[in-house]
Image (cartoon, rainbow, N blue to C red; front, side, top):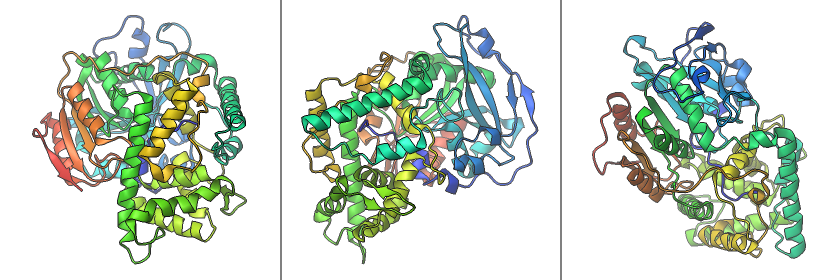
Length: 526
């Protein structure tokens, strides 16, 4: 499958949604209907969407994962379905719904409006992410001034219809295949698997839905949501790929922006291949930091020489290409899962201990620990069911980004990636097998280009020096493109706001509440 990785942002940094505390016990919110729109400009033909009534009620029926089923029981949460057109070129045609979750402001008298957030991916659930932030949000001044609103973008999570390609059993089988064979026969086999995957996506999701799940549509959905929530101007918090949603919204609706925080930025001008290679450099940098931490300990799965850490990791993982390790409960750890488990742990230092333990277990021929990390990354529940994050990632990525269809270019991209991230080199030759987007059945609707934002209010871009998934320079470029203010965080993790840095939280909170920008050149340290 695609090597460019879904980056799950706040969910990965906080570990698992199931482990993230929700807000303190609240009085149960009563179901009610609410009509606040239309507010602000309404595009022609969309009046009924911008003025719709939302029916708020308990969130439990919206749960799509095991962790949601726990978190969504909180009586202080309320959820609703937002209707939007499937195809904005045909607003009188078929409509679809988005799941929306809200944590109301604790001081309605001084409420500013809604803080709408998206955690990225693409493919991650904004509803789940809002619950994972509930505890830190409740301890912030923001909780009295804003409703925290998380929405599942079209086709994702609780939104209906959902993008669906593989069953749980099919996903388990797909994860066991490393696709490392670069021989003509191996390439043909891999590409046939990709074609079969696309056929399942078409069969189970439908071509029209697949044609209308891109960021182009999501930003228009978000403007409908802004109006229906009663906000004349949007206040937005976007993590990771959510920064692309934010920057494209700013380009499409600059006059509708009140404030915007973009944390863990995507470079809007970067090609998919260049983004993939930059991501490889980022994960290698994070691996090097992990190795330095690990090899300095009394016991380390990679030994005590940081210069040998890559070789030690390769020695542990490369044999899995041909011989997966037993992982208990009838499951095996493949090479793919071992590396994805490592990548999951490299999102934040809080997961390094778990990675070290998993690698130590692998030395003893057990894949249990690394498989648990990989399951977390893929959102696999204990019952074998998956969220649709990976399927949705493919669907959005394949319509958002120009495709690489030349096998020689694919091989060169693989070579560059291995050079950028040698710890992820499986030892086989660079592979020319085309990935899933080369066989996608609908045209690309996005583009990589410098945003043209017009009269946009000042925005804040947070970029982390050691971000493994969205490199620091991407944030520098995005801040310049949006004429915004850059806030630098010195650390090794993916995204930072509301995740334990008082320095970052204080400056960004002041901006969101009072529109006070961080000072020029502002920096915080972990």
